[in-house]
Every structure is written in structure tokens, then in C-alpha cells.
Length: 306
Image 1: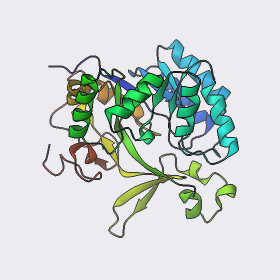
Image 2: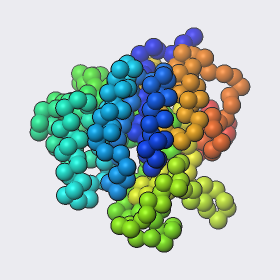
Image 3: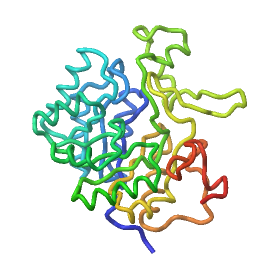
């Protein structure tokens, strides 16, 4: 028995701060992975300037030649006129779809009549909003990361009844993006001001663990972004996703071991999920609580719930 072949896999934008060499190596490898969509760009912090727009465009062209659909992801928290200038250049790139991760990008793209992808940070919860955005040019939308399977199933059913055809994308793997702040938590950890951070987040290519007094990794700090401590893994849910009408499963890049993650999800969508289940693809705590309508850090299989 196999999952629906219509479920696509996407690579989300790299959320962490890597070196130029690592970005180049990563996407060179990704060109051969069984993913249909690749998101590129800096979506977290404008101070991460190693990669310019032209660099992302160059990588995008190479991935396009490998048969990938390329999407440029916009910055999620816009804080300055300089950020807005960069955003305008991104939206006006003329080659690739743009994922709008804040209202500034959404306004720029819709006003110009350009098609776009709606990111999870836009918090799209109802068919009325999705209908408006579809008319404005939305081609795909990502469900909020905290939305449960049952709530999403009802929303997708409502969308079908109202003729909303833009595919839904679910964040299926990776540390969950939870919040953004004008403060840089990684710089604060090193007792440096944000505007003179010396790019210390590059020391942590998979984020900086924030642990409780009980030594549980509660969050992952990534500059101005706060991620979940555990890594969401919905491999076992991809068949249900396809059945309920989800079009794309998003995999958030890791610094190491990403090829194995992609291969596991590709096998899962083809119905080749091994049993018994290896609990973790990489050496990290995993979770799926939000998907099952429970606290986000819960893991249903570990708790005997799935």
C-alpha cells in the first residue's frame, strides 16, 4: 500500500547561519535529492549578509536545471528601511516565486500582481482569508505549525467546499519556528550587543540549545528566532496528510544528515515506512504534539498514543 503520489516534498529555507561554502555544498547535494520544491534565502536575520540575492539566484538557477521548483523566502521580521529595500529587490527578482513571510512582502507581491507562496508566519486559519489571498495571487500556503491534524482537515474540507484550490503545505520535519524578536538571544548568550554580535550564531549551525533546570532542551535559540527544542518528525503521518488533501510536506534543513531525512520521507510517501519504527533519524529529541492536538513538545509514539 502506498501513499498518494501527489504529495510533494519541499526543502524549507535554511533557518540557521552557515558559511557560504556550506550553503554551496548543501544545495549541490540537494540537487540530487527526491524533493520537488526548494526554498532559498535568509528568512531570519538581516545581519546575515554572507549570501546576497545574486548568490541565491545563482543557486536557484542551478537547482532549476536539476528539475526543482525554486522559491525565494522573504525575511519574517522586517525592522528597518534597509530591510524593506532588500525585500523589494527580492519580490521584484523576476525569476522565481517568492514566499511571503510577513505582511510587507504580501502587500508588495499582491499590489504588483505577482504570484506568491504564503508562509506559516502569516497565520492563515480560515477559508475567508485563504479565499482573499487566492484571488490576490497565492499559489500555495503553509499551515501554522501549531495547527492540529483535525483542525487542518476541517479547514481543508471548508476550502474544498468553497472552491479554494491553492495547495496546503505542512511543516513535517525540523525544529519548529515559534517566535521572532527584535532582540538577538544568541548574541545575548555571548554578552554582545545585537548590532555588534560578531555573528556568533554561525558557531551554532543547528542552533543553541536552551535547557531547563531538569536538563530538558525546551527551546533552540537561533539569533532573533526561537525554535522548538525537539525536532518535529511527521514521517508516519504523510499518508494521512495526502489522504486529507495536503499537497506538500516541508522538511527544514539540518547541517548534517539531511540526505537521510529526505530519503526517509520519500520512502514514507511511497508506503515504505519501516516497522518497528526507528524513533529518530538523527541524534535529537523528536516531537509531534501539535499535530495530534497536544502540547507541541509531546511525542505521541513515545507516550503510546500513535
